[in-house]
Image (cartoon, rainbow, N blue to C red):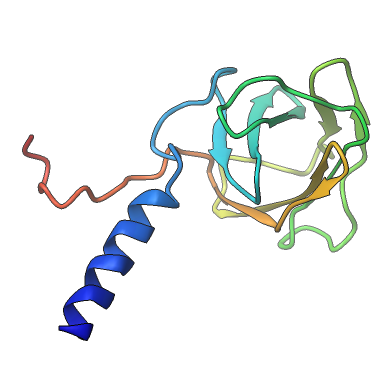
Length: 137
């Protein structure tokens, strides 16, 4: 019985912690949940826009907040990110191709609350969530 409860708990937790990563964010970007808030990354030419959204994917904030992006395959040094009104703008070096396979790591703090590191696989894409229905609904 304990094994059944544990298995069910793990399955429920995997669904609960997906937090919409299979859907575009309110700004058309890619969502992760590093803590009690969400990060949304939007590729825009030679920059990345990072929105720090509340638990409901709303109210982007830069107040008492910070963003740092690292592309480990390119450099251990973080990208320079500047606070805008509703998002952080992070300039990409010219040698970065977001269409190539790799990883984008986002370290953030929203309104004084530090989140865990959010990992985005490159190229950026929506995560497929296995709902257990094998594509049938």
